[in-house]
Image 1 (cartoon, rainbow, N blue to C red):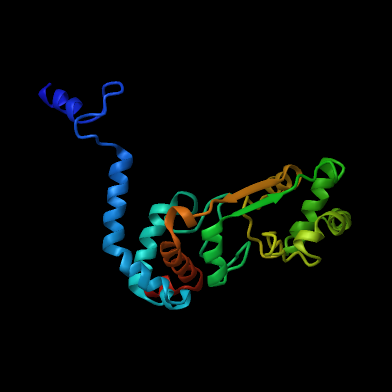
Image 2: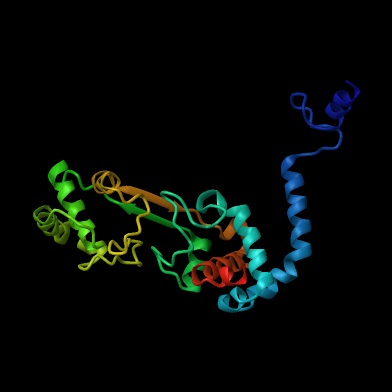
Length: 236
């Protein structure tokens, strides 16, 4: 009882009364961030002035990048960075927008927004969607219904080639996936691919420039680059 009374006197908890200590969770967070920045800021700055490839070669930098990743990225991409349905695997070297150090950094800083239009009506309904899916599967070497794939190929050249390319290898400038490598962001079953073609997909990677700052993003980019090149696994 005494503890509860003392707590309510010192901290907010009674209507609009802010407590004698004038404590807020936001204020505490800001103080903790300021302490961390004062402690690690010079080290962040040191790595920020190095090329990403050089940072990725530094074990200490990778460990710092890993901690940042676990805190800020694992919710979507997983603690092991292997992603989940709708969230890219960052270890497989399959990149929607490109996997160079500079592009990875730009993606984290500015974010990405991708849209796959819904094509069910343009394809003439479910049958046309199924034909298009058969052709898409043929691009990655799957066994398909050849007649259906041939019909789908005609639709592909009309509706899909502008983004995914004549050979199906995609277009990183648009974030259009490679359809030939059997890697599927939203699932690769017949049902899932037909759903993607019929209903479309949207994907958003939020920008982190303002939230994390360029120094931390530089470390994150180096860590993610090390995952896709196997450097982090070699260290283990």
